[in-house]
Length: 194
Image (cartoon, rainbow, N blue to C red; front, side, top):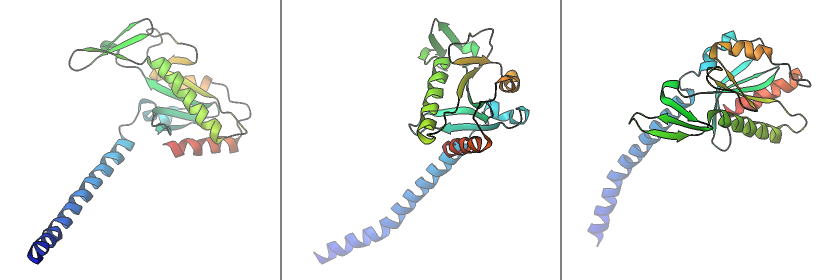
């Protein structure tokens, strides 16, 4: 019996470090993928951050506590504006409120209406901020990046051409009551989600 226990202990002694090394390498790989995904490619509005009106801060993407990712969030005197991108027009077809996108396998699949998604994301972000900031409600506006001539706006969501984003933001009225201290606090809350 002793030789069997000794052989088992010897096998564990040789296998355990190798197993732990494999687990460690896998965890490092996951961390690298997560870090790369967090940075990711620059989003359309973030690439044009230098062109935005004074006082505007762009967060390329934020992650709500429920796991939903929101790209291109701009915080400024207007409050908050978030921008969703429309799928490519050449690979999109619409029937009323129903949207479909052609995938690489040439099949058409239904997707969530991007304008309605932007409105829901704005509502989710607003509710999250209301839970954090009890004495002030910050205005959250939704927009999609696309051709306003091809896609009509809906209640709560504008359609803005990418080149018109700086002018659109500049045209938004400053939110009353959004003092410099409150604006700084809102930026901190959004930065915590980035």
